[in-house]
Image (cartoon, rainbow, N blue to C red; front, side):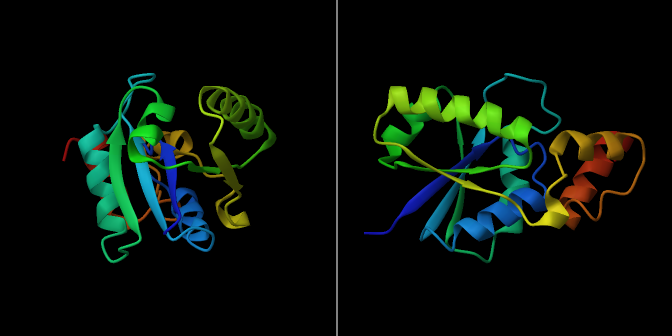
Length: 161
């Protein structure tokens, strides 16, 4: 039986840091589902459909990676998929505080969940979607933070085409 892990997030937009976590996780699990959250907890730049399309384009040649969206409780999504492996990326201590809390809550809701924490390579450690959006909004180059398709999509969002 294949081990499948789910990497949840907003991915608004996906960055090289996220991509690195997916690639590293494939050394541990047989497949990864990138689960794009549509829960309107915050204002998104890209719609769920746009985020899925950007991610699918990046991983189009990798059959071990699938992209799906989910709404509602993440533990319910995992239960529906019959998956108990969660993949999370960690960049800094502040990430750990939030992630630790989420692991404990998710474990309380589903005692069978196992979470794998992966740190991106050093060159991606400081990248966040929020910073990438801010740079793009101010007209800066984001080519070293995101793939070309994401860079183009950011330019379209902030320049209207």
